[in-house]
Length: 125
Image: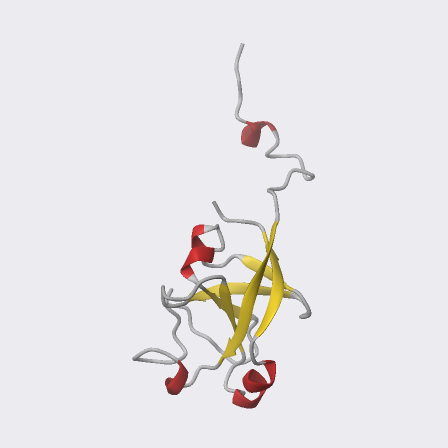
């Protein structure tokens, strides 16, 4: 008798999906300006992606990366429309935190401020 891994058995089944995770995080906003980023080009993320105003992008704290919220993972953010994509990572001092990219619109980032939100994603493990 052959025992197949579940992923092989269900790989063609459209209803098969990984478990989604919903957690509460602190959400702030950031802009691609030198005063808010590390040294170098403020439009280049820690993973090397090029940011452009209008992109739905977030940066994540490294503890969230360890939970499976890795590069290019799609995320739903409570109170915001559409999916955001993880393209940047934060300094390791931050925990349970995301930064929402707001291009060069510093006023929009300040209006967002700091708030607790729920995010939902399927971990990339």
